[in-house]
Length: 353
Image (cartoon, rainbow, N blue to C red; front, side, top):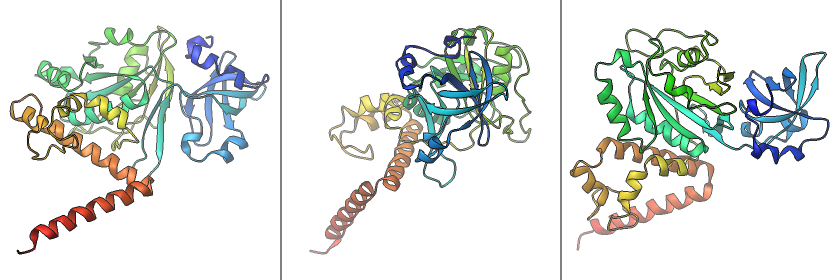
């Protein structure tokens, strides 16, 4: 396997001069606690981070992630290496860390395609697919939606049409990984040297799809719970695998909680239909909440836009504004002043004449 089979291209070629002559370009293919498995032309090494990277990191985003290209100092006799530098990332798939923490978690980097996997069982949720698409669009990679377990859904065609109506031109595939149907079209989505990641909730079948594409049981899989169709976390770390056709795929742990991280660009693309409608609203800052001549609410009334889609858009925007205020004190002060002005105006209106 040469560098181009691992995803090396012109973008990284321009960064090659940043490497010291003694360093070897390698790609991070798996992440452990404090260690990384990296692959280069010569083979694989278990690598640790050089102290200068660890101590200079301001956050987790400054450390290697699966998909990164790095410069390593190998020790072939030990099967070990030290990561001396991280090359600039071409694309980066990120989310906010789960829970109350306010920091970025990098899911994977240097991706060409991201497969958003949903299951056509009781876990089917178009609003969750919208959320994932906002994350993917913001990464710089191209999204593809996979609706798995079509064999378990009697109205799979209707579900396909429902999803196609909200993803605005993003390719959508119906498939059943267990039955082996619908997989042929996926193999053409990841050419030799290209990298794709699979994201989705636990139990939607990400690992099963990858195993079917590879033709082996490389990844562990488990059943979903019968009472609620919820999945178990069988994938516990991010791992890059090679497809028979030469493409690279990354499996990721299921996400019970997906909060966006600085996704204004992704939001604009995932909800482009709402942005286009809003251009015809009477007021430039229309909130689509009862303002006169609101084009978005008119589209809901005439059936052009679904109310649930608008409400999900509002919810995601509120999350991002809250996140911005937590990170940016100036934004928090501006928001506080805004509400002070609103409350003051309300008090004036309530005074008797």
